[in-house]
Length: 236
Image 1 (cartoon, rainbow, N blue to C red):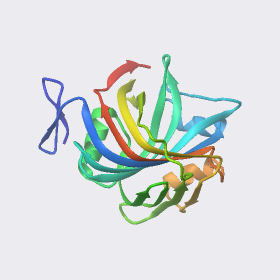
Image 2 (cartoon, rainbow, N blue to C red):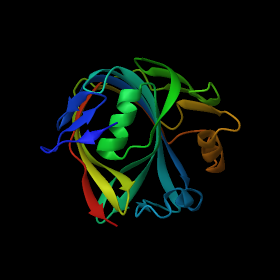
Image 3 (cartoon, one colour):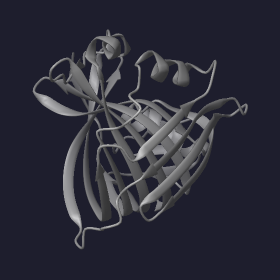
C-alpha cells in the first residue's frame, strides 16, 4: 500500500520515493491520431477536463515505452492519452496505462493519479521500428501495434516540459514533467498499424472511437529521460 509521509515523500511497497521522481533511461514510440471529439467526449465526462478540439477532432496518442533505468523499476507500458485543457493549462490526460510491474502501478496511481493496470506487454523498440502485443494479466488480447518512423534521426537532444492532467476525487491533479528526448525519428502521415482485440474494454473503446487506419504522425525516440514532480490538486 502507498503511504504519503510527513515530508511529502511516499512509501510504496517498503520503498521510499521523493520528488522529483527520475526516469534516467527509456526508449519510446508514439502514433498520433485525430479522432472525432464527439466520440471521445464521453470518456472525459465528469472529470473536469475539456478535450482540445480542432474542426471537431481531438488528438489521441498511442504511446509505447520501454523503461530501463529509473526509480520506478524496469518495466514496459502501452498508453492511450488525449490532449485536454483544465483552468488554462493544456496537457496530456492519460486514459489507459497498462504496465508490466506492480510497483510502478501502485506508485503511479498514488503519486499522480495515473490509471495504471496490470498487463502483459511484449514490446520491442529498435531504432525507428517498434512492435507491441498487449494483453491483460489474464492473457486476453487488447491490441497488436507496429510503428515505423523514417530513417533520418535528429542529431541533437530535444528538451521539453509538459503538465500531465488526471482527475482525482473532487479535483484534477496537475503533475509537472521535464524531459530530454534524443534519437528522434519522425514520419508524417502513416507509419503505424493497429489490430484491436475483441471483448476487452480498452480495445472496445478504441474501436468505438473509430481509430483511423493512418495516424497523423509516428515518432520513435532512442533515448528518453525525464523528471516528474509532485502532483498539485486543482479544483474542478
